Amino acid sequence: MVKKMRVIADLHIHGKYSRATSSQMSIKEIAKYAKIKGLNLVGTGDFTHPMWLKEIKQNLTNKEDTGLFELTNKDSPVKFMLQTEVCTIFNYKGVSKKIHHVILTPSLETAEQINEELKHYGNLNSDGRPILDITAPEIVEKIISVSKENIVFPAHVWTPWFSLFGAFSGFDTVEDCYQDMTKHIHALETGLSSDPSMNWRLSALDKYALVSNSDCHSFWPWRIGREANVFELDRFTYKDIVESIKSNNSTHFKFTIETDPAYGKYHWTGHRNCNVSLSPKDAIKFGNICPVCRRKLTRGVEQRVEELADRPADFKRPNVPGFRRLLPLSEIIAAVMGTDSPATQAVWKPYMTLTECFGDEYTVLIDTPKEAMAKVVDLAIAEAIMKVREGAAKVTPGYDGVYGQLVLGIETSKSKSKPFAAPKVQQRSMSDFW
View (tube, rainbow, N blue to C red):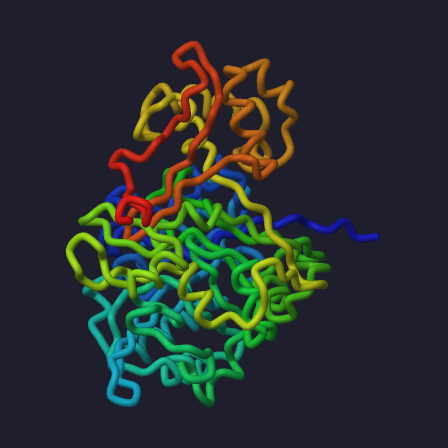
């Protein structure tokens, strides 16, 4: 019997030529931190950008003709898949639509052919995620015409802006967006503010695989791999990954790693300038108008799902890939430490201790026993990790571009059972206005 290989893949990231991306986001840094995270497959990000494609060619090679790439001059368990994200802006029935799409391709030749097609619709040099004057069905047609091995899926489908179901510039159905090219759409990316259970509420989405990726703009482990896809494969190839997604069979596509959707920046409806955060029920009571400034609220993902759902919130689809809710280890440690940033030495020290002792971050988050962790780091950190693993941690929902916040009730020498990571600015809810 052939032993199956576990592949943990983050297939949507960005390189340093994308807006709001770290200038240190290089291929080597991505590989370094992907390994620490526990990823063994990552997207290259941004192959449509000429300078980034040049760096891909300089640093990666396809030694075994698998459709996947490896570091040229360094032994690393991390492989890369050629990937980019593009933004299409177009009119549909007199309304402007703004949709982001992720593109995967198996070779440098097909990547260059895609770029040759897309350069006629926008300036590929302007941004790692270029804005293209082309419709959603047209871009799918262009990509598939280059090669049937290419795959396109809509990115972060529920975020209010630039997404398929976005409240401000999206659609109500996949078919309205992609029209006659819908037959080539096999997957939807859930995004940080939703998870599979939320998407299962729409019976119309049953035909699509649900993938999860970080969409990260920096290589730090609290960004890269914060969401990912887990496969068990006979062969570690581009074709096997893509076919596992298309078939949506839990035999090979095992589960996705999801942040708690409340942690996402657009989970609840709200208005960040007024510190107003509302559940769907409360937002509807206010007519989606901010009770402070009387302007329109940014409709959150949970409310948007509620508007389109035809199934109850506890509906579970059988025989499809499952999911695990996690939070980045750095964020958990920062919450225990009571610090605003995961990029401090106080966080890095226990983080590196845990990942070096037990192999990588995912192993710590998913498998390592509490007793083993407590031998090398503070007990409060081990208990917080267990709370997240068991689904017992609470998250104050994110809204209108504000990340959700992990709230713990772990006692340390610095606290007397006080919750950590309370929001820096107290969110106001409906009870404040009655």
